[in-house]
Length: 369
View (cartoon, rainbow, N blue to C red):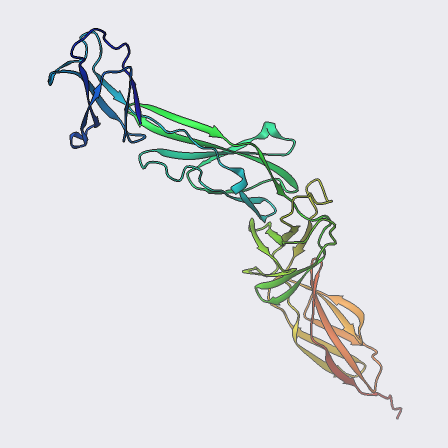
């Protein structure tokens, strides 16, 4: 609705003239409409679309004769109006902790019936509790937003500012309104995951495993695993995950975080409880062979896939030596007995053991002639 303030009404005129008003959407002559009103101080015109430019002409009508409104007044104006913005109702806001460094926000559009020519966007401001001077902001036209790269184990405050704007030729008019600040939580349970380890499953794949931490403030909703070598992150609800595409004998560092969707901070504090694991893919020796000679046994094996390894030799589950070659000689083994043999390949702190091999050593005797 358009309100026109005409001003002082002429007195002692008989008959009293009327006012004729012609209004059109700019550059759209087919949209023009004319209305006649009794002359009064204020006139209201219905059906004026928001965020749309109109040209409006006023004329004086006396005995159906049309005259200019006033030679001292402008009778041609350009007009556009912008509806008042409605603030986001924070009661409609839902937030999900999708990882330890990300909050997903979802809210209801408070101006869902906005006329088509109006433009609306929402400015989201957010900061970590106690750090309001580091407030950041993002503008979106959607009703969902992901806040990423956040500080873990922090509460966050968010505020929504709704802005509705319309273009009036070279000028822009707008209406804005802000919600109150609302507190959302980014938390993780206290305590580190423990017993972080891996099991090598094939040439380029390993399974990371860990022990669920003991928590005092709610359930664990998931874990985030960070591959520091590839600079990638992935999440799981289980206390294990498979990682693939690994290069043999290349060092990988993985961090594991536990988190929940609660509103209380974990007891870890600071940068938050985390644990890391450095992984090397190491392969066990294969095709182990033994050759028995008088007083000694020669052991050979095939070099495993991957990088150069050191080898540990075990006889009857006792380590008897180390070598960097795929060959080892054992002397003075007890004769007339079946022995167990196992070869371990070591790279850095990772070890892979071969399967057991069983071999017999005969009883040798020296005969004097």
